[in-house]
Image (cartoon, rainbow, N blue to C red; front, top):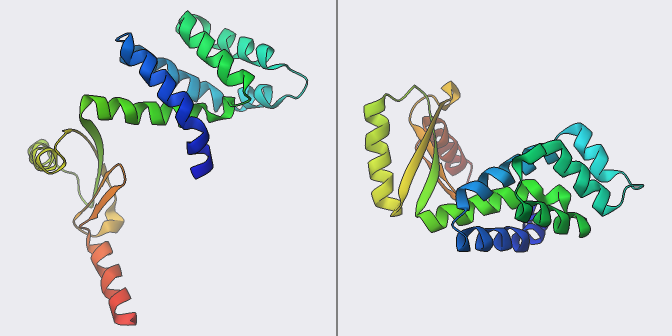
Length: 178
């Protein structure tokens, strides 16, 4: 996983810098998201792995599948990625682009998993507290998982706050084993 991230970073950074310089972050975000989704399709993966096709043919086929969703710069970007045999990195490139974009916008996506459904008031209060703690605008994504027994698990990038009963029981069990 780290190797794919290392390989994807220069492409994501180049795309981000171009999009930022031309005030097209939202457009490039959408185009890279589409490219990532298309690259994960089973049929497209067979095309991208076909040894008889040249990198130009692979890029052309890829762009044709997406229709007119890509502008000239995005088509050029995909051509360069294809020439370097890195089309399989498109999902990682899109993910890293989104991280750069979130950093620029001073925002963060936070996944909150709770044992029970959180109402709107609870979500708003949690978003405000997390926004103050993280120093960023928080976009909250709530989910339920009854196996937590109680409490919540909060994930914001590489930060994980486990306030679940299941997590506390696991820590207690580990402490008793030591």
